[in-house]
Length: 392
Ligand code: BGC
Image (cartoon, rainbow, N blue to C red):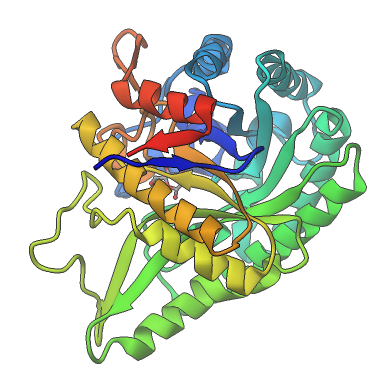
């Protein structure tokens, strides 16, 4: 039997992207270098990506026409500060035009200051292990806020600082490709400082908009004997960040699946579980779990700033989001202050080391022509956004 699920007035519906995954030609950051390193596990180079650098006006217009109310995207630090201390007004003006395009379409511009990519000059000088990087990041935040702060709707300091540290310094899946426990903890520490210093720089600047970090969260689970490892991993990659978010304006919660631990490490999805193109367990109910945990530990308003699925069957995407949204509604029913749902992603894009294979987009892209194809799930979710309710 179908039911109608409504959402509170002002609930924000959006989609998200990140500069390096969609813009194209971001050759001046650590990811471009990593993609071109024959020793890295990347399967594609980002290349032209979705050419969103030039095509953003049309993409933003489609997003608004579909019925969404917000667009989350990121500033590319390496464009704005191509060499240390050398700031590009033209690059800042580009992002000002992008923000203006969202405002012209009545979309709230949600701006992420760091989404996985760091300028080459900063990674050549110690990257996220060096105490200089958080300070350089804060200076970048200060300059960008001075130029854009009057038009930003909401700001995210660092996207998934926990992922940058784990993937880059423990699992060697992201640059700089390190696998070392002590170096990982150092990077975690500097990411936390980066968030704190960036937050202060943004808040001290022009404009007055909510600011927070976005955190990759998982539903943590274990088999017998995996408890200790699970707790240890959750502590360093989730709890210290949730703790650091206390007192911020909000926390951006981002969730895709569940992680299961055994006594010797990760054990993967349970036998018989459905998995996605990413190899993740299909588990939309994890979102509810993470929102509850984020609200409890960070004790600030929660914005779901990313949730989604890479799927070849678009109906699977609808099924995933339907279940995830039911969970958000249950959180609201219990009085949890959750204020948004941003689907990841607006477009099929460069999925980091996995390249262009995984299709997360509400909009598909012909990679040869850059032609966009709006999927039925985009219209379905856009209608939910417009009406602020879901029939399920
Ligand atoms: C990141 C995105 C990424 C998505 C899907 C998140 O961890 O913020 O950049 O594409 O997950 O894997």
